[in-house]
Each structure stands twice: as structure tokens, then as C-alpha cells.
Amino acid sequence: MIVLGVDPGFANLGLAVVDLAPGREAFSLTKLLHSRSMSVGTKAAPLLFADRLLPVLEEIWDKYGPFDAVAAETPTLLMRQVRHTALIWHVMGIITSWASVKGLPFRHLHPVALKRAALRCDGKTLDTRDYPKKSAIKLLINTLLGSSGRTSHENDAILAVLACYGFREGVLA
Image (cartoon, rainbow, N blue to C red; front, top):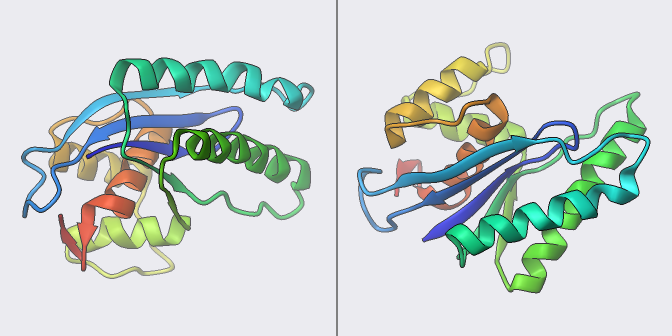
């Protein structure tokens, strides 16, 4: 199962393509095919987001597709940053529309749910005072897949894939 992962953003968008081996009890046959971070655009030119993002999605589709699904971190609402929040949701609208045109199922999880999934892999429970840091997520991804993304945004996109499609009842699929 090949899944495109997305860490939402417009200045720092994380994308990852992960080949999952469903039904296995370990990620030994799962591998990271591609990851990248990109800037979709600037606050001053949000209507150009599609012009920058769609060719990248098509390029990744042509090289690694067809995909079976898309997984994403749900964009959060940033208090007192309404414009920033709206721009991130605008980018996600482009991605969900693209996925719909391709006929791809789209799953997303809130950032806290992604942190819980990461902690379950280590046999821990979520402590709201001590969320896993970016370095811990990178280490987890590296442990599970044997490699990780170059940036935290790429690793968050990978985690979205694993949490949305790779975990089963608290166990790695």
C-alpha cells in the first residue's frame, strides 16, 4: 500500500511517500520512498498556492504512484493567527481536492492523536506536559523504517501515514 503523507503548511509543507506492508506485525517491509519539504508560497500570494503545489503532487504521483491513499495531520487553529490558519487550510483544500480527483481515500488525525500513536510505539501514554519532541519523532521513524526525513515536517508527514494506515489497535500493522 503506497500512501502519500502530508504535514500541512504553506511556508513549510512536508510530503512523504511510504510503502506500507499491510497485515505484517512489523515494519520490516515498509519503506520510505520519498520525502521533501517545500514552501508553497507566501502570505502575499495565496492564490498561487495551487500553481506551485499541483505540479509537485503530479510529479510525485508520476514517479511513485499510483497511491492507494493520502494521510495528513489535521491543521490546527492558531489563536490570534487567523490569516496563517486560513492559509494552511487553503493548502489542505488543494491537497484534498487533488486526492478526490485521483479517487484516493483521505484520512487525517489531529496532532495530539499523532503524538499518542508515536508514544504507543514506545509503550508510553500521553502526558500533556511532555509531548514527544521532534527529535523523538525522528528517532521513532528511523527505528521503524531504517531512515527518516531530512526535516521535522517530512517526519510528521511520515508519522501521519503510519498513524492513519500503519497502526492497528495500538500495534504496528
